[in-house]
Length: 171
Image (cartoon, rainbow, N blue to C red; front, top):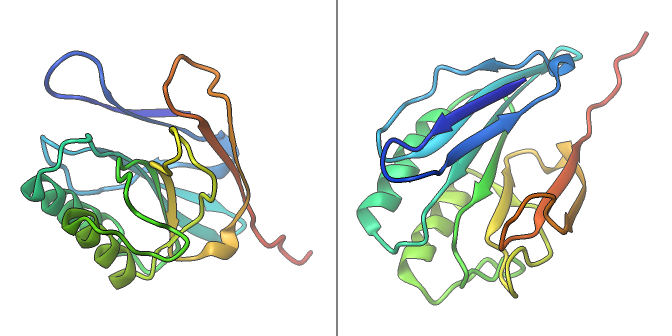
């Protein structure tokens, strides 16, 4: 199934979430903001519920926009079950190994991640030498097999792939 949130301004843009129907996805009642490109869905499998979101943050360095993105995302992830946030966040100066940056705007984002116990799971650069495309989760045991590969569509970023790792139910 395909869920999309098209950009409300300019040419092109937006985000898309494609989920296999076996995960029983439904669009979640998440906050909407005209400037934020994001979409949220709840996935149901083996009596496990997961909130997954796809977000795009343009590379402009605007603290007001970032705070709006953080506020909208905080509302979307304020659920009692595991959460995944995927997307191109365009933070080239964050050192994800040590969770540090020299940029105050990026530091605001790192604080958001820490405050929400989010782990960033992509370990290889996705554009040039930077990790711009992220997998953030409050339950890293659900993520396995993270890989970056050539993008199957025309892009200046590598594609990021991963598997959701669910415990199999007892029969």
